[in-house]
Length: 593
Image (cartoon, rainbow, N blue to C red; front, side, top):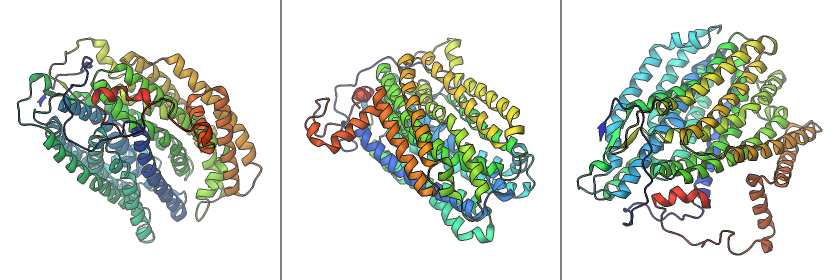
C-alpha cells in the first residue's frame, strides 16, 4: 500500500461485475434470504440490552445524585466521551473504515492469489491510529481546566468537573480502537461482537457506580466510564484477530498488480472529522448556554436527551446493518443498488423513529415519572424533563435521517482507493467533500440563534427547540447534498413516503396523548398510551399506503391467520440456504430485502 499525501478526493471505481472464479475460503455460507433480518435481529437485541443498561445507569445517577451541581459537573466531563464516541465509534471511524475494508474485500475476491489487502490496510493504518489516539487522550487530560472553562464557564464548582474530565479523557484511546475493530468486523458481516460493545461499556460503569458511589460520589461514574471503555476494546480484539488470521488463508503469496494496489488518502479523514465535530457541537452549545441557567438544567437536558435518543437509536440500527452492503455496492460501482438500499433505509428508519417520537410526545410525563422519579429526583425534575423531551422529539426524525444519509455520502470518498482510479481535478467535486460540514454549520447557526433568542424566556425548552430546529435544517440540506454527490435519490418519492409517515405519527400522538392523560398511574398511563400510539400509527400508516407500515402490518396479519398467507413467499424465491453473496450480489441485495 502506498500513501498519497496530496490526494484530496477520489472518484468512484468504474462498475465491475464479480469475477467468475470461486470465492476465497472464509466463513460458512450465509443464507442470502433473511441475512439482513438475522443481522438486524442480533444487532437490535444486543443494542437493546446496551440501551437498557444505559438507562439503568441514568436511573442510578438520578437516584444517587439527582440533578444538582455535582451531576452538572460530571456531565460537563462526560462531554469528552460523548464527543469521542460519535467521532471514533459511531460516525467518523465507521464512515472512513467500513468503505475502506469493503474495498479491500472486493480486491481480495477479484485477485485471491495476491497478498491479502485487508492485512495491508491494517499495517498501514492501525499503528498511526494508536499513536494519534494516545496523543489526543494525553492532550485532553492535560487541558482539562481549559476545556471545562470553555464548555461551561458558569459552573459553580469547576474543580470537580476538571477531575472528572481528566478521568474520562482515558476513553479516547479505547474508543478509537473499538471504532476501528468494529468497522472491520462489520465489513466482514460480523455483527455480534460490535453490537455488544455498549453492553460491556455500561457494565463497567454500573460496576463502579454501584460499588463506590457512596465513597467517591460522581467520580465513581467517571471512573466507570473509563473502565467501561477498556471493556469495550477487550470485547473486539479476539474476534478481529480471528478474522485477520482467516483472511491470511484466503490470500496468496503472489504479486499484486498495480490495478489492485491500494493508495492511502490521509486527507480523506478531514471532512469526516469536521462533520462529526460540528454535529456534536450542538451538545457544546447546550452545555454552554445551560451553564448560565439554574442548577440542574444541564441534567434535565441530559436525561431528556438520553430518553429521546432511544427512539433514534432504534432507527439507526437499520443502517448500521445495511451500511456494509451499501459500501460494497459503491466499491463495486453499483450506484443503482446503493440508491435503492438508501431509499429503503430512509423510509424504514423514519417509520421506526416517528413511531418512537409519537410515543414520547404522547407519554413523556408518565415515562419520566416511571423511570426517574425516585430518590433525589422529584416531581419538579419530572415535569421539567418531560417538557424538554416533547420539544426534543421534533428533531428526532432529522437526527435519524442524517445518520442514514451520511454513510453513503462519505462512502463515495473512501480513505483508500485503487491505484488505477483516475484522479479528478474538478474543484466542485472537492468542495462537495465539505458539504456535510457546511450543512451542519448552518444548522448549528440555527441552533445558536434560536437558543440565544429563547433561552432567556423559556430556559431549557429554548435550548431544546434550537436543537430541533438546527438539526432539521441540516437534514434538509444533506438530503439535497446526497443527490449532488452522485447517488440519484428520487426525492419526490422519498418525501412523499415521509409525508405519509408524519401524518401517521401526528394522529398517533394526538390520540395516544389523550388516552395517556386519562390515567394517573405512570405505568398504566404509559402502557395504555403506548398501545394507542402503536395501533393508531399502524392503522393510519396502512390506510395511507406507507409501505414501511403496511408491510409489517400485513406480515403480522398473516402470522395471526396463517391460512391466508401460507406457502411460497411473495417473491417466489426458494427458502433453502444459498451460497454466500458475492460482491455483485451484495450490490443488488437491497432489491430483494
